[in-house]
Image 1 (cartoon, rainbow, N blue to C red):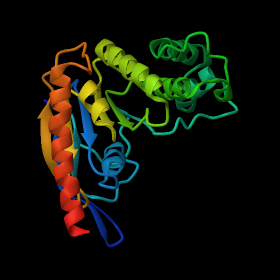
Image 2: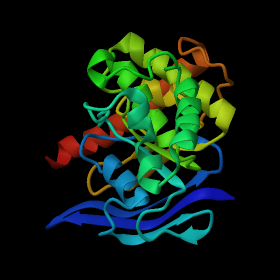
Image 3: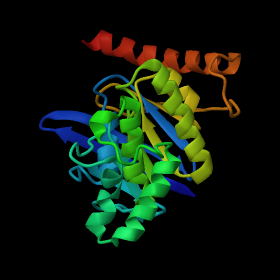
Image 4: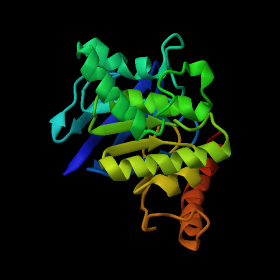
Length: 252
């Protein structure tokens, strides 16, 4: 059964059609990576799924049920860490549980479990300004995980960190996914990131966006991004993206 099903998604910003009859499915327990030209609506898709932008045409289902507005089964990790600078790591992670009225002892237990899961144990009493960029993103992920969502939406969460830290965070995300088996939709501009992380990869067309091609990723885990199968898959994905960009240039 598909965890998420998107049917005929269309979205306008004024007279600008961004998404046009876009449809795809996300399998239960997979990492689905979405790549495409800049401005093609990748983030818009995630915002529609999570309920941040309900003004769209089409239908979105989770576990066979139609989504209308916010759904607690879905967690969202943004590009920027969006931490409260006046709260420590654990107080940031606890925030959602605090809003829900979870008692202090229990929310601390749950939050510490999430902090350990993302590798921040020992930094729970630090403030965001004391953390590196990668650690801030781990804290943001922990803040989402405490709510135990079934589906994680991740909007270029590692784009702002350096290449070495990005590779480390990718490895940690795979480890977390293997332990939790959560369904993940991961938006990225990086073909290398998509082929390293993704169970499948969706390539979107330029605006107005539709699905151009879906790649199954046959490379077994743990993956060596320098291996011939990984390099060949990157080449195939890049070839399709070049086709899309070439069509954009012809019409510009």
